Image (cartoon, rainbow, N blue to C red; front, side, top):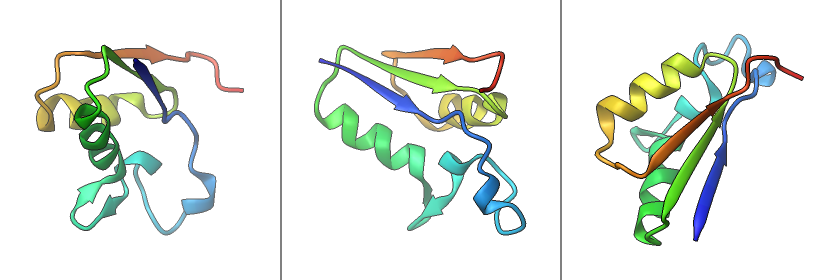
Length: 81
């Protein structure tokens, strides 16, 4: 099994409330993407694909600094739709 996390939106509904990518919003002290990766790893996927766009470097920085998974691939959409 493979898995895809779509985390490339602008997060416009969070404007003024949160000043970081949506997937980095903390829930119980951990960003949403951390919870997702943890749950996915429990299922032992062959590959986890992060589909990123807007502010992707912030998300990648968090992932590389805070996870030890070696089965993560990244796709960055250069042109938002």
